[in-house]
Length: 62
Image 1 (cartoon, rainbow, N blue to C red):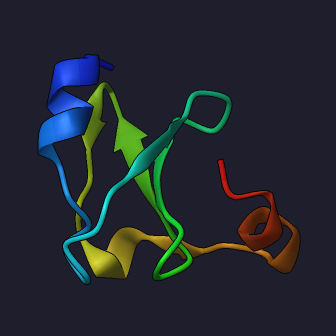
Image 2 (cartoon, rainbow, N blue to C red):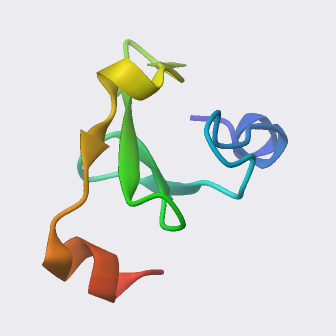
């Protein structure tokens, strides 16, 4: 995924920064503990499609 695109995106819930997780192809918002999927190179920025981060993932942060 293009770094410029990631820099322009914000969490749809809190408008905070997102971090790319290349392994899981997700954009992560640590403030809301949500991971938004990237499907076929397109980020799905819907809260209803996001998964909740586990406690370990929340502690990893960056």
